[in-house]
Image (tube, rainbow, N blue to C red):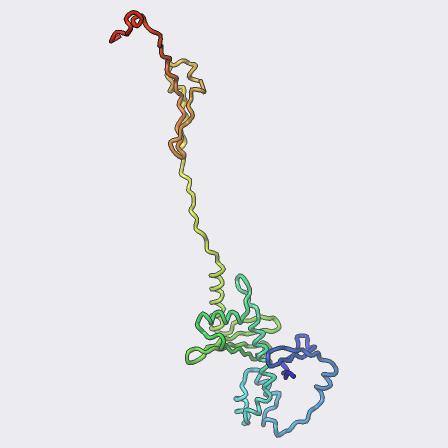
Length: 275
């Protein structure tokens, strides 16, 4: 049989929340049967009551964060007599601390649980994250102060947040909590920013416009006119290199060679020298 402790009511006040030693929650609906049994007075042994403080006051002070040792010292009784009333309250405080740790915190590019922020950032500081202790206590305004402590050298470190169960919000309360938040933001921004690839940029070289040239001005007037405007006589442009074409120039064909023999060749078999 599991032993359960009362940790509070449901949000709509229609049920009671209980928790076992493993942290598993159970909800019991508040019906007439529960009401009748709760309202039945139970006999109390006045000798067992702490002197000068009632059980309700003990639980209220424990819920606000006071320790059983301080309450026992003030009441002048043994701490064991105070601790017997602390079980349900300590379970409630642990429950609220767990709810705060599981609250999603908005980051620039995603959401992350408060517990993950704490574990990730403290691990970077070489803190043993298995030794973290979460706790909470109720504030006067109905919200809860959530604390996490860890060993640090010969002492300990701690961070505090304000947790609003109704709104599901968490706000940093001290410098250490703010540093954890700021370090996490800087880390996620650094990881999320894509590395820009540096690519070579092609730069166009300026081109110089070639002047228009009248081809007819460069054709010898002694050439027959048939060659001046003959498209077949224009050679295709040659390329001196990328982006540097040569200007097409009209080329006149060579005059025909007369190969018919002269009279000297016929009579003497050769052409006289110098002629």
